[in-house]
Length: 340
Image (cartoon, rainbow, N blue to C red; front, side, top):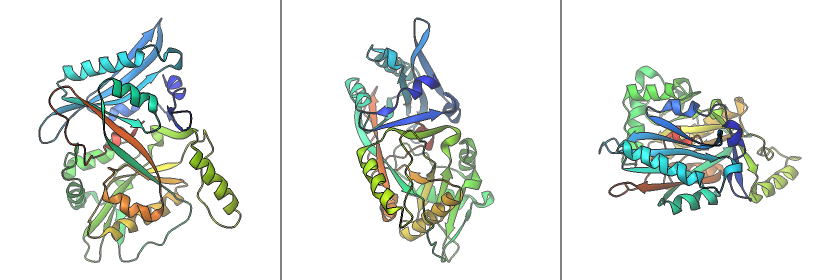
């Protein structure tokens, strides 16, 4: 199954993302309820689909997340993907899910057309701003930045809950559930979560760094023209100054993901201080990029803009099984869903 996935980059002839997973089902261990359905043809694995079942916090409404649909290139265009999606939808409805959603990489026209044909609608476009960490930045001295003290985690949790209040799919944390969340995600943990305090010792920003390489690595299987052009420019400039590093086509990115971030919106400078701190940490860890995953209206994007990120888009598609879909105008990104 891993070999099949390596043969299926996500995108089109102009831009495609390649994924290398350590194990097919490792991602699912982060969820309580999940299933993987496999299609076989003549005794061979022809494809598979994964899904998880979640519950909305207030309405107690159940919904399904379709994690992935993979079909061996030898069996593509034979209806297997359609069959797998129908089986996953049937499974979701048996568990009383009201709707299903999935992420589709923006250049992946084939997946978009397939899901649209099956009744899914584009709800929003999640932004993935990536910062190249190639030179150290000055962190303002008026802020104290330290890893979280788990005995005093409640203040950080309160900030996260306030920041994400009203976002679709956000379940408010307690101190206990947030600490469990930190420990559940591989290569995360309290030691990789920082809080920023102002001169009054109040927590005004926080964020974690997640090294996803234990679960997966990403590369450009087909490099977009814009990246090729930037590499040519930076190649010339590299003789006179420090420049961002861009991996070669097929070379895996060294990425740390900025997750569980929040900040006092009256103090965006506190979040900028934390981003600069994490930039320097990334360099010390010999990583090349910091990347966040945000709703397109998230205030973090305005802060990150000053660091000149390169931004990718993954679109959220959803289909109701009963009633109407919830509003996706402000959408909380569950980091567990970000394994492609």
